[in-house]
Structure formats: structure tokens, C-alpha cells
Length: 141
Image (cartoon, rainbow, N blue to C red; front, side):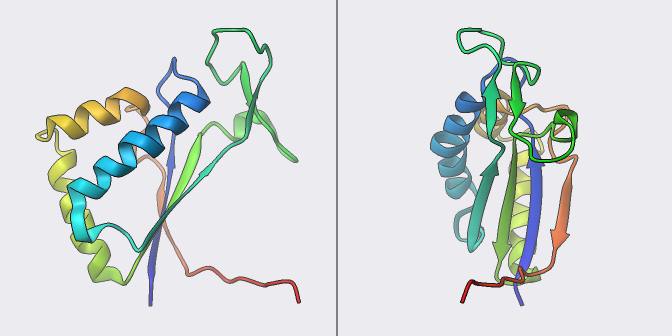
């Protein structure tokens, strides 16, 4: 049975949602693949909030200027920028990945540290991580 981990992440203050997404996709994910090798998840899906700037020409990259496009709730309910879903073959696969992440996240891997600090809000990193059951999917007939 697969083992799925969901992580919520926040962008570093001062960078725009598009800068955050670009860095995550073009720098961070390739670096992660290199660092963890064959323990990389079977899938690593990223779901970004759709954010619309209040003032298009503004250099204000805060959430106050980049409100999430919500259908219910309040903007402050959605303070994160992306939730990532990582699917592992099983718990053992996750364990190998977690061990490698521990090795690079302990501050000894300067390349990893610099990368994370470039785009993530380090005060909130890993503050919301949860194990979820395998997806239950209903398809249109």
C-alpha cells in the first residue's frame, strides 16, 4: 500500500508567487532529485494557490497584495502558497527518503540550505506535514 505525505509551504517574504513557483519547479525539485536519488517519491505533485495581485504594477509581494482566489472562507484561511503531495511505494520507501532528508536538512549541506533560504519562509518550514490515506477517486462515467 502506498504511503502519502502532504506538506504545506510558504514563500519567503519579499518574493512574488510567480518567483516562488519558478524557483520551486526549476531549482528546488531538480536539486531534491539529485540529493535524495532513488528515494525520491514515486510522485511529487505540487498544488499552488491561485493568487491575484490587487495592484498589478506594485512591487508589493505580500499576501495583502496577492490574495488567493477563494470560493469560500477568508483570504487569511489560505496563508500558505503550495501544498505538495509525495507518494511513496510504502512506509519503508518513505523511511529511506526521510533519512536522506534528515541528512541534508540538518544544516550541514550548504547547497540545500542556500536553496531553501532563497525561496521558502524558513520560520514556517515543515510546520504543517501530515500523512494522508490513498486517494479515493470517482470518475465521470
